[in-house]
Image: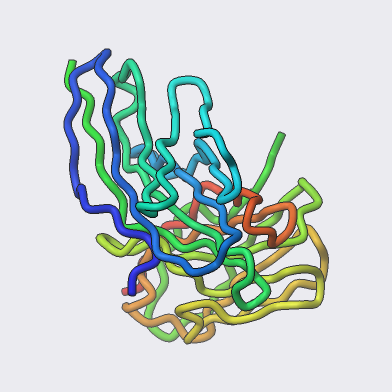
Length: 117
Length: 114
């Protein structure tokens, strides 16, 4: 089974509007971390935001927030006030707390966000 | 503020050639890893290391070797390049292998095998 599922291959948003990128995850480990990365057309992978499985509050980093619904196993990324520079590929990823001992990072297949002027 | 540095950025090889992709980090991170990124498949783990002298296989290790003689460096070796290894390769590091530590990525190496 896929550990990370991103069901939106592509999304469009109007500049200055908010957008939600969906992510669901699958784990039986009680300790895990959820991460979002941005990959612009230049190709680098940029870490955006982290949510821990024991965190009571949703994580926020500037215009990025993570809508964490533990019971539903979802960790959606919300980008507020979209800017043209937000156009990129976005990846959701998870690290489990007690895997093989290495706690490797599992990635979804990504969502391509296009911001329309 | 170098972070994770990968060289080269681009490389073209012929089938059967060997080469080494270099990765270095200056953050004193214990955990380092190599991923490949193929269209529509996200990133897949090739090899990883939880500290100097310790390496292990990831999801797609065949055709690749790694070593970790220092904390800073984690080179990836292609033994005999095949067209199926055409991909973008990313090196990443994190403070340790805790589930709650983000991995920080290099800028990637775009590799084409002819």
